Image 1 (tube, rainbow, N blue to C red):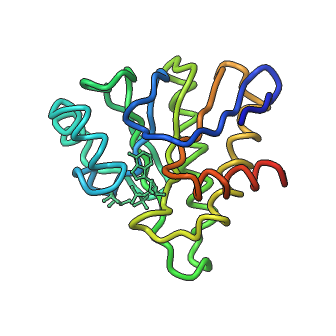
Image 2 (tube, rainbow, N blue to C red):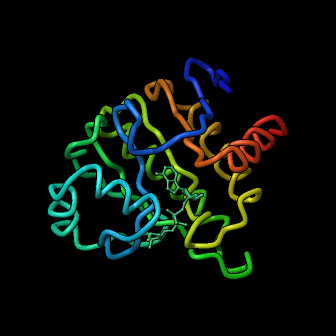
Image 3 (tube, rainbow, N blue to C red):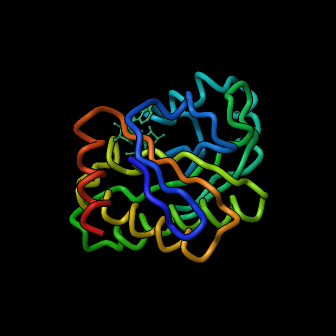
Length: 175
Ligand code: AR6
């Protein structure tokens, strides 16, 4: 599924973040920027040790912020590492911090001259964010950014499995 936002394209696909041919892929990282499980583990396995070495130099990343490394052996030239909130009950700034992950990643892409990027569904695995709520925040934040930033040509939201894809497709339709 694909929609136009001004001059830019927002795309939803079911797939694996490590196989995307966008200029950058976004990693759902942790504050230490140490390789973990889920998307993070997959990106470090596929991208090779160069990414971890660069991460070590960065000395961590606070929740809601983003940092960039090269893409190692990935097709994507860059990895943007962002740290989603751990979901508790929704009243601990989780929505604001999750929106910030998408926005800060996009700002970093604009600053680096990255024209296309692929996001996974941040915080909805190990960090426990309810996916329907996370999907609404993701599509709204990305759409708002693209409307103001035509320099980003394409954002692809990469959902792992059909069920996650359907939730995001519904959120996009309702927007
Ligand atoms: N491609 C796309 N999406 C994927 C992939 C993949 N290869 N693998 C899993 N997903 P998670 P979080 C989906 O747990 O919740 C790590 O240990 C998955 O189904 O990767 O932000 C970090 O180091 C889920 O919907 O990220 C942190 O400690 C979504 O990606 C912590 O996990 C996110 O799941 C971050 O947790």
